[in-house]
Length: 288
Ligand SMILES: NC(=O)C1=CN([C@@H]2O[C@H](COP(=O)(O)OP(=O)(O)OC[C@H]3O[C@@H](n4cnc5c(N)ncnc54)[C@H](O)[C@@H]3O)[C@@H](O)[C@H]2O)C=CC1
Ligand SMILES: Nc1nc(=O)c2c([nH]1)NC[C@@H]1CN(c3ccc(C(=O)N[C@@H](CCC(=O)O)C(=O)O)cc3)CN21
Image (cartoon, rainbow, N blue to C red; front, top):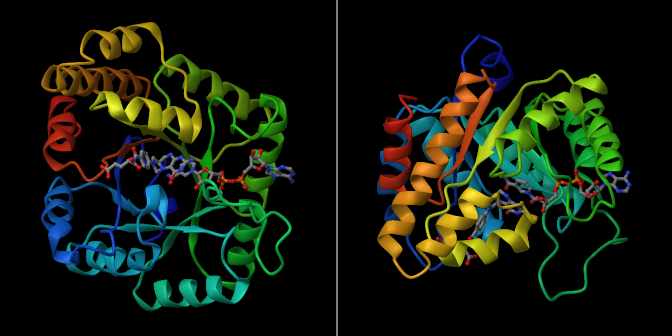
């Protein structure tokens, strides 16, 4: 099923993001997590592609399992900056052969400590180029990433908004946001996209902060601002991992409860393959 058909039915969709297993471990080792998450009956599960150093060649296998074994709609991530155009078509054809109907089309992160490949031939430079290609040559529902606080490489919010508008016009069916920790920033983003007539559904990306190590990592990935109440949790529980996790889960729950009360289109939970913590969040917020 194309996910665009699931939105706009008057209820907030719930989705999970998972990583495929690293090359060094077996596929089965994470299927306990994967399977456990699917029993929570999300509207869809997205599977990353090369995120945080995970193996990109396992995205298809994992998406196949989600869709064809567990019967949950799969959204396969696909990035373009480091891939030859032919490899992208190969990947898209394989996904289609596995009945995967939904793609999260992104540019991708530049590899850390390597010269970035800007200007390389036979790759798509921006997500909008990948999206236009998929739209004209394949038949998928296409999601794209959106940045309530602006993308870190973009000089200002207005320019980023214009880039988002172009990306939507190139064939995006719905958006998933980068993580944010202050709902006011998200509501402001919804107002701003409305002003440029972006009307497709937007799922709110929620990352539960579960340990102090994650904080620096997340800053590096996206520079999301940390509001005072969350900063207080980070400082108070820096040396107490169990309390940190508990407070982080509570914080994510309070964000979600407020978003659902405001009838957002979707909640996209960055699970980091953490089964028990994700379960707690879904149950405490009465999402399932
Ligand atoms: N769920 C996930 O896995 C998520 C991953 N990301 C990562 O964020 C990164 C960015 O990916 P996308 O958002 O797909 O990239 P994008 O191609 O939409 O945008 C990337 C940057 O290029 C700029 N840009 C876009 N069009 C431009 C143009 N015509 N001229 C000049 N600059 C332009 C944008 O403002 C932005 O700063 C990727 O690393 C992606 O993997 C971000 C959010 C969620
Ligand atoms: N720029 C960007 N790139 C991404 O790949 C990405 C985003 N943003 N935002 C949304 C999600 C969140 N992602 C994340 C978030 C955190 C880690 C992280 O903390 N990784 C740890 C390992 C964690 C583990 O294996 O449990 C690390 O040390 O790399 C990785 C990817 C992937 N996605």
